[in-house]
Every structure is written in C-alpha cells, then in structure tokens.
Length: 315
Image (cartoon, rainbow, N blue to C red; front, side, top):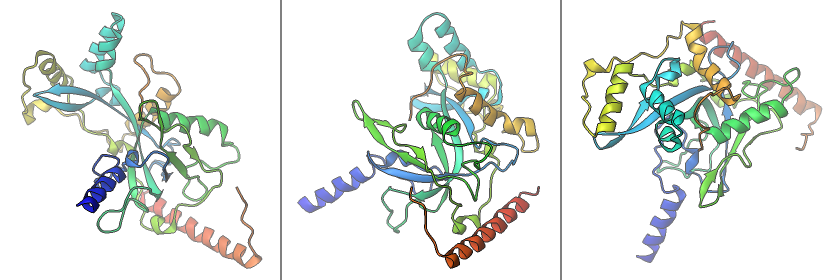
C-alpha cells in the first residue's frame, strides 16, 4: 500500500498537479517541474512576407450561468468590444481593480517543433518531443524573445531565429519566485549556435496561416448580452442564430492576415494605450574534411526540403 501511495504521489508531482492531454495541439510546457527546460524551434508563418511569426490572442473571462467562460475579444481584429469599453470606464474612474478585472487577457500563439521535452511520457512511451505544436506564450516569454531579437541577432548578418535551416532553437526554463509562482523569463533564451529543423520534421512539415490559430469572435451585440448576463447574474441564451459569429479573417485578405501579427509587435513595443501588462504565464565542432563534406550534402538536402515546403504553399 505504501508503494502504491508513493507511486501515485510521484505521478501527480510529475504532472505538475495538472493532467496532460497528449493528444492536444497545445504544448503544456507549464506542466514541467521547476528547474526543468523545454527546447522548441519556433516555425515561420506560411506568409513569407510576415517576419514575425506570432499572433495575438485576446480574451475575457466572465462568470456566466455559473460557469467561467472565455470570451474571444473583437479587438483581435480591430473591432469594438463592450467588455473592453466597460474596463476602460472603470480605469477612467480610477477603479483599477474592476478595470483590471474586465480587461482582456493577452497571449501570443505560434507554431513550433518540440526539440526536447522534459514532460513525462504517456502510457505509450511518448511525450511531445519531435511534434509540431501550438505554443501559448505569456508576457514573460514574449518579452524575452523581443529583448533577445534586439541583442543577440544582427539583422544584416544573422538569419531570423525561425529560419528553417539557419535559425535558432529557444529554451523555455521554468523557475519559481515568491509563493511558488512560476517564472519563465529567467533562464529562457535562444541558443547561441544555429541549427536546422530536424530532417524528420521537415519532410512532412506544412506551414500554416497563423491567423487560423485564433478563435472565432461573436458579434458586438452577442458579447454585450453575455456581459449583461454576467453583471446581472442572469442567464444568456445559447442560441446559434444569436451568436452572429464573425469568421476568422480570410487567408486571401493579406491586410487582415497580418493584423494579429502586427498587433503582437505593436503591443510588445509599448504601443498599448490602456490596461496593464499580462503576467504569465559554445564549443565549436571540430570535424575532418570528410565529415565537413557530409555536412554540406546534408545542408543541400535540407534546402531541397525547404524548397519543397515552399512549393506546397502554392507560391
């Protein structure tokens, strides 16, 4: 019995107190233990003209019908939002507590390959290593990425970190501060040596339009109905006809496709006018001539794979 209790305790600790969904597209790096590090490779946008492969996801959390609901914010697409308007009214009235309560939560989404994964393996002996996943990144990690883009890389000489062949892996390290609150900005960093995306991933890689990672957004009136139900403690009708959902921007509309990526850059550059920042979440190789030649052949193979990926995008 003691052995069973020890096993169950260790299993729960390994999961960081949370159940890991290994079938999810979202990589739950936050479930790793304090002191552990996950290594990922951020992937580029399907659009070659977008140099910053992140989109900004905005949402509000409201208690409605006894359940905590995530309400996608229309400001992701540059539209008006009644919940944001209420938040701003509170801020204007110097009521920071309620202003922050109704303010939108912000995270950034990107696609990435998991290079090394400290999470425990599932019953089939697998974790997320080698898989293409969606990363949900909070303020701490995004600030670190932006900071290092300006200090580690020379735009005239270095490839972008998400270049498929000459880019750089990114290490996400989990530390702790205060009352066990996780921190990700201490120790998280780009590697200093470039490396290609693993060939096993490249051969089947399909880049995506990052705007498709964003959720659908309800119309202004429907969101206002949900807000009023939250305030009054009443119920909101769950009627498909009343949702007036606004479809995600078409991939053929280049201006709309880039809006969320542009917003991500502007927010992180300090152009956000209201609200507050969100909390989160080498030794050179020495090779003989023969090995060097093999390396050149490998590089050519990789470049052919990248060319194939670009052709598959229809460009």
